[in-house]
Image 1 (cartoon, one colour):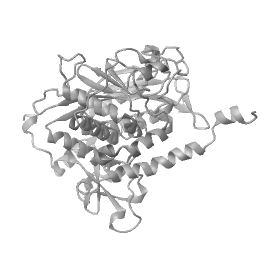
Image 2: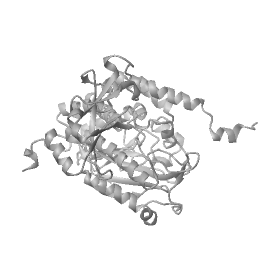
Image 3: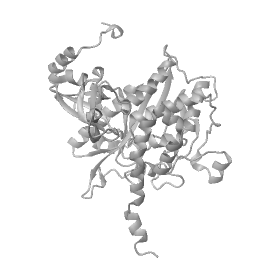
Image 4: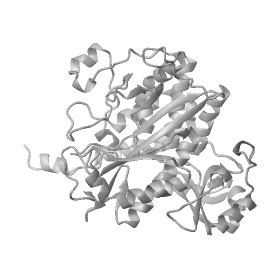
Amino acid sequence: MDMATKQPETVESVKARLAAAGVHTVIAQFVDIHGSAKGKYIPLAHLDDIIAPGVGFAGPSIWGTGLPRSGPRSEYYGQGELATIQALPWMPGYARIVCDGVVNGEPFDNCSRRVLKRQVARLAERGWTLNVGIEPEFFLVTTDENGRPVACDEADTLDKPSYDLKSLARVSGVLHKLETGLTECGFDVFQIDHEDASGQYELNYHYSDALSAADRFILFKMAADHIAEESGLTFTLMPKPFPDRPGSGLHLHLSLTDASGKAVMADKSDSHGLSQIGRQCIAGMLAHSPALAAFHTPTVNSYKRLVIGRSLSGTTWAPAHIAWGNNNRTTVARVVAGRLEFRLSDGSSNIYAVLASTIAAMLDGVEKQLAPPAPIDEDIYEWEDAEFVKRDVNTLPQTLGEALNALTKDTVLANAMGDDYVAEYLSIKKPEWIDFCRSVSDWEYQRNLTWP
C-alpha cells in the first residue's frame, strides 16, 4: 500500500505489532521546562490509558508547571501521541511514546511541546512548514571523585584533534551502537566526526519538520545517555565542560517550504541566496537574538562558550556578535544553500522552546517586514573592538543574567510563546542566576584568598 494512502494505526494494532517485536513496556515521555526527558514505565497492555486519559503525574513535582499542590489542577497528565511510538533498540523490550500535557481535562498551555505546536500552527496558516536539521555536538567523558569531567580517551591529545580517525576509532563501538539504534528508529544518520576538542564528537542526521525534529532530538539524548552509560562513560551536552577546549553547540539548519514543497526563503538570484521572506526571517531572528539567548543558551555555563575576545580553548566556532553572512561561521547566523544556520543554540536547552522561540522571531520579521542589517562576509573574529562600533554590530548577551533581562523586556516574544510560560520560565531561571552570582568558585579562592 502506498504510504500516502496508508491508514493510521489503531491502539490495538500498535499493541499487537509491538508485542510481536518483544516490547513489554512503554515509556510515556514528556519534557519539563528545562527540556529534560521525564516519564513513567507503563505495561504495553495499558497503552490505551496513555492515549486517553493519559498518564498521571503530581504536577508540582515537575519543573515549570506552576501547578498547585491540591485541587483538580494539581494533576498533570501526559497524553501520548500514538504516531510517535517506537521500539528502542538499545533497550530491548521497551518503546517510547511522546506525550503532551493535559491539566483538568484541557490542553496545558505551559507544556513546552504544546508551545512549539502553537508556533507550528502559525506557520501552517501561511501554508508553510519549517524544516530543521539539528547538529548535536557532545563530549564523552568519565568523572573523577568530585564529579568533574575527565577525558574518556587519554590518548586523545592532539593540538588540533578535528576529524582525528585514531581517536574516533577508540570510541567507535559506542558511536556505532548509537548510529544503528537511531537508524532503526527512522533517523537518517549520515555522518559522525571528531570535533575540535579532545573527547568531542558530532552526529548528524537528516532534517525533518520542526515538531518531529524536536521529538527526535529528545530521543537522541535518551539513546546517547543510555548507550554511553552502558560503556561506563558519561554523555554530556554541557556547553563548556573544559575551559581549555572548544565548547559544544547545537546548530540549527532552518528552511521553509510551502504546500508544494517549494523553498520559501531561497532565491538564487539574490546576492546571498535569500528571498525577501528569507531576509525578513533572518531580520527577525537577529532583532530578537538577545532574548532568544535565554532559551537557546539557558545555563550559566552556556556563556563560557559565547565569549568575546581571546579564546582560551584554541579553535572555536562559537558566535559572540549579532550578525549574518554568506557561509560565515563567525557570525550568529550563516546563510548556506538558501537556508539559514542559526549558531546560537547549545544542547543544554529545551529544544521545544528553542524552536518555538525561533519561529516566533522569524514570523515577527515577516509580519513587520523587517530588513536585516548589511551582511558581513568576512572573519569578524579578526576585528578590533572599534570595528564592531563602526559597523554597528551588537554583542550577544555575555551572561545568563543579560539574556534573562532581554527576555523580560521582549514582549513580542513573550506574547508569542505565552506570557504565562515565559513568566514561569523566568521565575525558575532568575533565581538560578542569582544563586550563581552568590556562589564562590575555586578561581576566586585561588585569586583572592590571600590578596591583596
